[in-house]
Amino acid sequence: MRVAGLLLAAGAGRRMGGPKALVELDGEPLVARALRALRGGGLDPRLVVLGAEADRAAGAVDAADPEAVVVVAPDWADGMGASLRAGLGAVPRDVDAVLVLLVDTPGIGAAALGRVAAAADPAGLARGSYRGRPGHPVLLGAEHLPAVAAAAHDDVGARGYLAGRDDVRTVEVGDLATRDDVDTPADLARVRGGISADRER
Image (cartoon, rainbow, N blue to C red; front, side, top):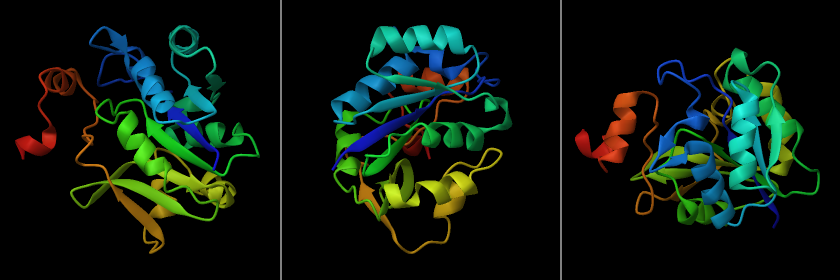
């Protein structure tokens, strides 16, 4: 199975104070950290959708992974749906599935990505699960890509397409990863301190 990695990293990060792709964690931009995880998880090709400050972010992508393909979403400000459509439109036709990762989930590393990617099926759908709670990454079989792109809108990515379906396989990764989003400086500080939001609840 050939599974592409699709990293969505186009947002302006208004609550963060700047594009999350360029926010640094342990001295590394989040976009570079995510690409390292995708590469370590065996995803190939790797595509990165950029938007806000695309030139700066593209420089970080090139420094981290020269083989990654940069896709700039012209309508990125419309929300995640626009980014997902742009990314899916650039996926090579010979891939069997696409693993979608968000740049603001730094707790998802190579081992978790590889485990979900192993569930690839051109006709299937899967997603990571954390103690039974569905989350990212999301794995889309190639046969679903046109319909997923058509359903993506505003800030709704693949979630709208997956909602209510009974054929989405869940792959437990809670032993390998955390599902926390990094949306604000407080979130980033918590991640730097090694504190999961799930443990705080």
